[in-house]
Image 1: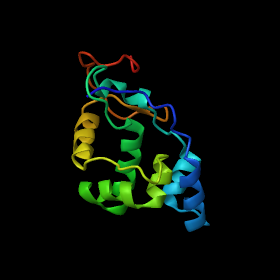
Image 2: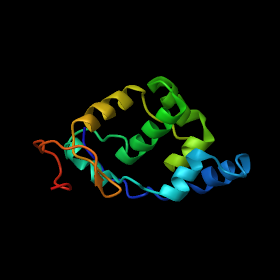
Image 3: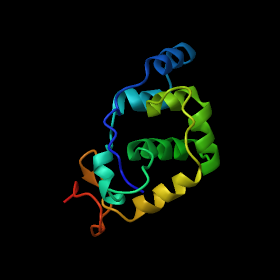
Image 4: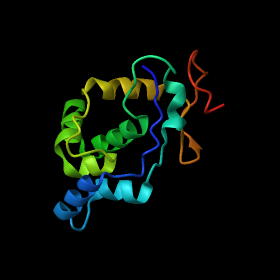
Length: 141
């Protein structure tokens, strides 16, 4: 799997924003996360987790948001993957189109496995540390 940087972390598609704000006039936690925390983790913060060649992966910052929402709601991987496709507030938090088809639930366990063994800088703090991997980016030297 390879990392293709996604620089659109702060942009919610217009239709997604319009529908989400109509449905959740006062907002909710998922929307608040996007609006107030913004990109609390960026793809470049996670670049050691991925090779620079091969099949593109889901945006790592989105996997972090899904993992946080999944934990907050006590969802299984399958339920979280379904929420990405079915819940307006989650599509808003992830900054994706309402018609986004999401991803297979197995990607969440793969992401957690990668996350548990790598150095990741989130909001300026180091959460874990590991040696660099061959073929990985050098964003966290």
